[in-house]
Image (cartoon, rainbow, N blue to C red):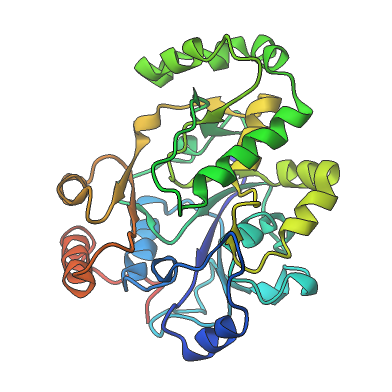
Length: 331
């Protein structure tokens, strides 16, 4: 008998005038990231729901996290769907927030959320059949724990700073040699393929540098969030007051790293999903959609795209070919 697995999806409608007006009242400060591409709507969310209905019919519940706006087409009466507004689970003093990190760090506070859940950003899609075992095995999240050197190629992008903060936080609580000794089989697991060499090459370094991030749907134990909050409540509380993403934040990956440290994961190939940046990886993205391989696809926005409308339509057309029929989540 399987434990219940919930999905959590965060979404924002960057064209909502009431939301935009509120956002303008809280302009990003120094070190903050308020890039427009973080909020614009690609109008492809219906394919996320179609993908879940077709490829993961076993899901227990879907928690749809929103500032308050909803897609006009969404069937909020669907028995598996629960709409969760920010004020229903975030502390009042964190609101309003335009910082996805603050939202992600508090997912465990969603009322009714199961111990096992999968977190999706709204740019991560299921494009072929997935099983419960693709996300949880032996009651533990599936993940690829691959240590890697941290590099940055954009001085204006705070993401590398955030990843460094995530690693710093686990280094403050765990000793690398002890962690590896306790979980040696998982650390050097054949599921990682050639990437297991990264774990070998990083062995001489005393502390963890960073870990491979896939920007795929993330499997979590709710109890991990509770544990990290117990141990670092003061820090996390302070960071959740940042209304925009900043270079001082940690994000949901710190919860993944904590699961690595505790050995609370089952090794998985990093090839279950594909990460594509629009404008850079277009050919690979459309090929993945056409072949419906691998099972999960991230279509990441890039502010440098100048043909936004044209590219948006191309992505919609590609999804229509593999998921043409409306789901029961649509009116």
